[in-house]
Image (cartoon, rainbow, N blue to C red; front, side, top):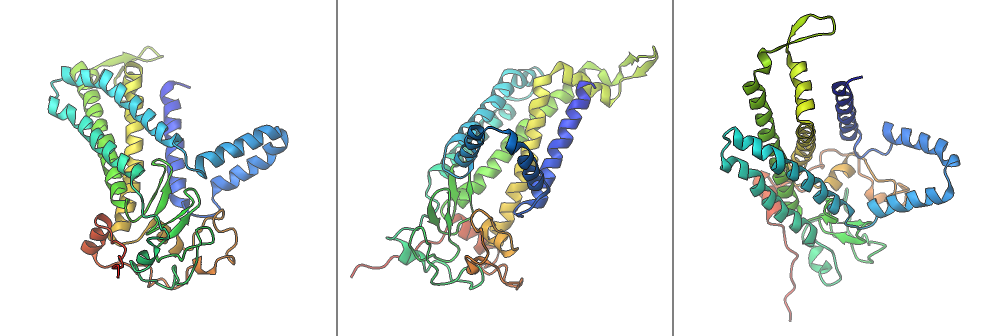
Length: 348
């Protein structure tokens, strides 16, 4: 099995995983989870207890408690990609007369992305506190379908405003809760959704621009070398024209790190572009991902182990009220980028 075949198998596996994640996102039972549970039942009796406890502790620390691990991983992947781009691609592009202004765009986008990334991490998403809850209760009306008046958070001991949710990871209730993002180690809520959207789009633009520059460099390399007009001797001693497969394998062998970087950038671009478009759609209809999942009957088993435990979280079958908070495209976007503020009581 040659190198190109192995890489093709790798691409197929990655794309299959993306399709499965997109198709079964939010559902309680997925083919992957069923397979994982089956493997766990077989492997568990053969695994030492200390290793099981360590694995559970590690997964709990990574996904159920606040930590900076994914932020460090974010910077590590970003550093590796930019080091390769600067060390090899930048020089090749300069040799092919690519302008400095074009080559500087990824670094400008990096600065913009880092700024919004920092805001996502540091800005308060809209934490509900005892001092602000009285005003936050009047920001949104209760739709009496997903959100009902008079419901108290059992952890925070505060009345829950409409569109709020208690985050188990951050251990706080968040106004207009969207989701908890492990990559920024913060909740995404009313006060930082705008930064999260801009972060996603700047990250997509950064990956897309670097992929275009890298692909353009490889294309010019092939055209200048005359590979498309070349020929080779096959295993039967026959002369064959160099087709696309031969050129692709030649690029893999000549620029392995650059080709792998390009594949990674394309993968990240399409993955994040789909995610960014999904959140843009939610912004246009004034809905959060938490509300989107709940309105379709999806719920987290860890957060809601029993549907009878909180009957207010179970959506009614009425689908006509799914966009209860939508006020038109312009006002919906305005609410995301200029979030509604809690009503402040005047001191008497």
